[in-house]
Image (cartoon, rainbow, N blue to C red; front, side):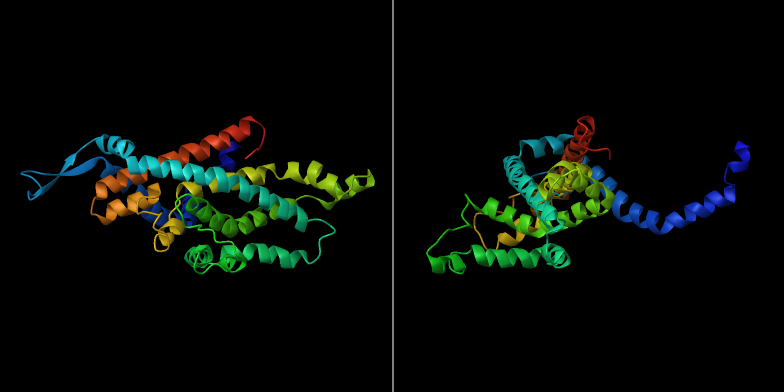
Length: 297
């Protein structure tokens, strides 16, 4: 009976053929570049006879990774990224939860309009959003100056939080959509039963809706961890606005700057190190969430 249920060889090949439109680009444009970067990171260029000698590619093993760890610009960039994540991730999650609970309430007016309004910033290109906020942050252009609040958000002590605010404004609506989709999957009978038991809208939000959002909250937390560790576009654009943002402000910017100097092997080592850290942190957080019972992903 088991052999009768087993798909034939032709059926298996037919199923594999349906995967080709996805599998081939995935291998060519995702797996292959990663493998190439890993290989590149194990080599380095050396010049015999000084800086004017002919460059020669030699096997360096893990020496490139040791240089990455010893690089003060890389370590400073990692500290900035973690400070960015410690501020941005909790704020955007708390704000997204508050907004989705408000828009999902039975007392909410025009819920469709507000869902679209929350999502609209995510549709704005990141470069455009950064330029727009950069103009707002500039002491010479900010409307806050006209009311007597002359705060230089582009100063070195505030620019990281200014960049984090751009991320909050951009991605909060995206998280609202994910959380609202999770609530839409809940049967309305659950809420109706709670109302029959005397629960008001606040109790329903705190005791029913919020626990049901745990899986979605873990998902957006993982997305946020991955996104913050790869922080690049916002600070790269802010370089033209603030002198406090350098070309090595984040690890991603350091990799880009290193590659721009034709140091491709060193840039590959930085990129692989950043990818490994992203995988470890996101996977570690997901495992922690599963062990604590926060999610069943």
